[in-house]
Image 1 (tube, rainbow, N blue to C red):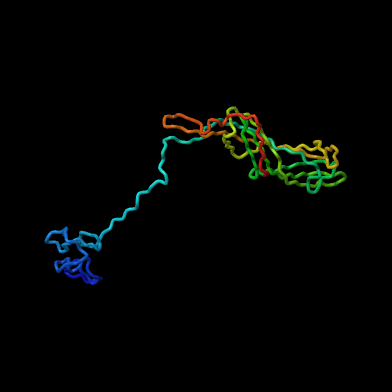
Image 2 (cartoon, rainbow, N blue to C red):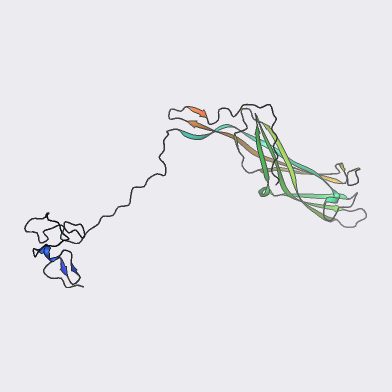
Length: 258
């Protein structure tokens, strides 16, 4: 601790004001106008710390006011208006010859059981909107396990196939326009079907019944939305008032591979 003298502004670390401030001469740090009366010990304002008080300087720092990056210049808002919502079903199916399985299922084998395990997390979907119609195309990965009894065999054997089943759906949606947006939640599984003995063209070009048809029924909901502007009075106008104009050229769209 420092040893303070009777003078409250003097200590071992120096003085906040010079000797001239105690009435002992002039100091270039101070101005000619005194802001204190004749009884004040520090007669002149301290130019060093910019304080009119005899005590040490006390600063009051305040954070600058937060400014928006850009002020809003409109009282309208942009919202998504719902054109419509529908619950739909999608059917994924394909027919696989016995030779597609590993190991290959011998011709004329008896199919005892077929287990299909779909991977809903791996589904790929592509959705496009035509005038008054929503088109869905996609693939669902599956693992197919077949238990069979080969001709002349004493015990059943199993064969597997990892593949994807294609699905598609065309849903009539009056009022939908090509520039609208589609919201679709994850697919849910409704049913799985397997049908052995379905005719298929074999590798030799001949029709054979050594094949299995796999069908999966899926369900989801498609919701079509459209961006519109709403004013403070509740008035609504479309962001693109010409979005539903028809063209003479049919839509051609190459969808990305899964």
